[in-house]
Amino acid sequence: MQVFITGGSGYIGRPTIQALIRHGIEVTALARSEHSARILADLGATPVAGALDDTDVLGEAARRADGVIHLGVDYAEGTAEVDRAAAQALQEGVGSGPYVHTGGAWVYGDTDGVVDEDAPQSPPRITAWRLENEKRVLARVAIGDRPVVVMPGLVYGHSGGLTQSYFVEPGRAAGAVPCIGDGANRWALVHVDDLAELYVLALNAPAASVYVGVGGQNLPLADITRALSHAAGHAGRIESVTLEEAVRRMGPIAEAFALDQQLTGARARRELGWTPTRLDALADLAQG
Image 1 (cartoon, rainbow, N blue to C red):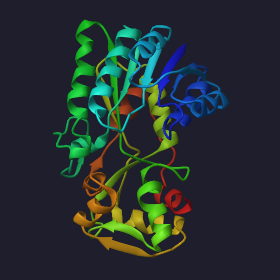
Image 2 (cartoon, rainbow, N blue to C red):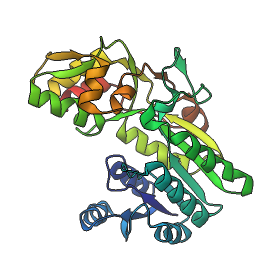
Image 3 (cartoon, rainbow, N blue to C red):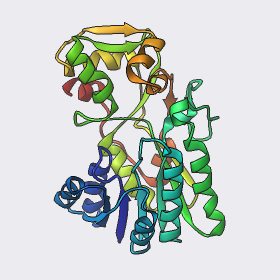
């Protein structure tokens, strides 16, 4: 089997390529620069030069593949439109082959206890654009396509991801890690290596399936920031900030960090046999 992947040189993409290759799957990957191409080649993938708005390139690469995993996102003006056009090109290219699209668990907003994929959606503004795109992706099941949506929780591990960019690095510079409010809100976490395995399994999922990618660890932000303070080199040093101050420092993503979410990945465990193995998030986060 050959799979074409976008976002392969990114934080989630690198372990996903490694997981695909471990499973005996040949990988081609979109490379938006020579630097990305070198990373992809070192991982064992075959680079395909192009960008997310090169729909002709995406469509042709998808046509040559047996399946597609779409991880790439262009966080610039027109994010929603670029993602929508890319998804359409990829789906048209791969046809009846599996197409795995990346969503995000933040679209569920604040949850009332532990919820699954069928919970009501109430996204913060930074991720609201995903709703219509995911609806369009899944609607193509009506014409014989095989769309699947994976919705990761807050991804951590290997000293990377959003926790590193928005908490550890600012905390290292300021002498204390920021915590939004009193930190009682919970984050639904998933280790990046476990998430990579879910993407591989999703290639064989029933058409129109949706899976929340979380490892079952719904931890208070206060505990998370305390762990991150160790990674930042300022153990126990936490700075409580209001949501308004957090938005000023971080931008609208702070509204997502302030969500109170508890989610379960039981559907992926039950239907795909997904078995997360990295289940001590606080220890991993403390190591940086």
